[in-house]
Amino acid sequence: MAKEAIEAIRRAELAAVQAEKDAYKKRDEIIERAERDAESIISSSISSADKKAKEDMEKAKEKGAVLVQEAVLRAENEIKRLEEEIKEKEQSAIDLIVSDIVE
Image 1 (cartoon, rainbow, N blue to C red):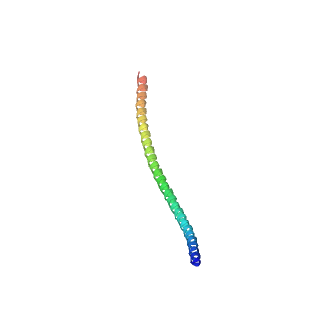
Image 2 (cartoon, rainbow, N blue to C red):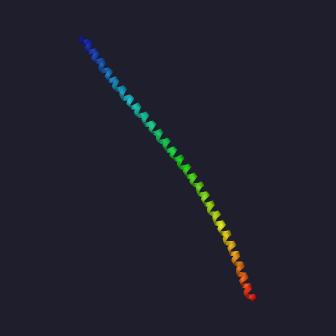
């Protein structure tokens, strides 16, 4: 009976050692999987941030182009207005000079 008890204890010790090995193996697998998942999440986050940054940059370029085009149009309109004003004043100056000469 003592021999059976010793064998039971020995089996229990071996089972405990094996359970400990299994636990360490499982722990290592969990850590490895967590590291892979973390790398995947980080990579995905970086990719998403990069895509968003590129989209934002493109929108900013488009908005900038629109603003430049609007500024050019305003400048062209101002140039036309000033040219018309110059023509009017030029004609007034010519009329004034002619009237001074005629008088």
